[in-house]
Image 1 (cartoon, rainbow, N blue to C red):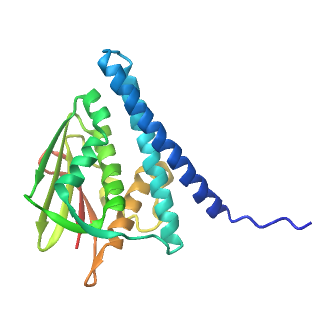
Image 2: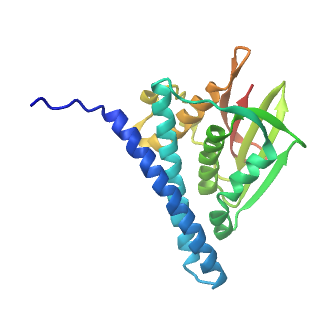
Image 3: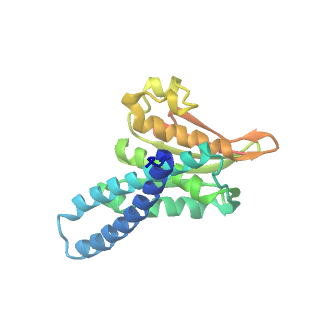
Length: 228
């Protein structure tokens, strides 16, 4: 009997989708348990916040992998609608509130009043969450999230007071998965995903893109997403 041919990439994508659903449930349970522990002033709440952080990071990785798989198969859905930036960014912080509270991080906003834009909410939120999670990890105590229009384009920036991006990240161009160095695969994969999602947003022949800088308002790293 001839052995059936297995499309490993399809199996992997299906498994990742199942794992993502399980992780989402786990994250919800962690949040519920953390609320109970805080009410009882239990010291273990800090350890639970770290578990929540790692589970959220894994969930983000799986979402990125699924999006890149769909992009490779040319089946990445782009559901563009008009969204208010203050609501999107508030949700970003709220989803990470457990870690923020336990690490006593200062999160500030600088968002234009009534600013709204057309983009895919799920993809952009996932992109920004990955950058925000890295900022929480590497900052000293403060993060600034800003959103404004520049030359009829949307600029969303996440700045921190950490040590800034390494020089090789500022100079590198990760345009394909093959460009990712194995020793920085975690960060490189996130940047490739960010570039992919930014570039899928196109208007009148102009595509979105990302920028990495050091300095900025908090003298640390600055990530900027630009959408047409």
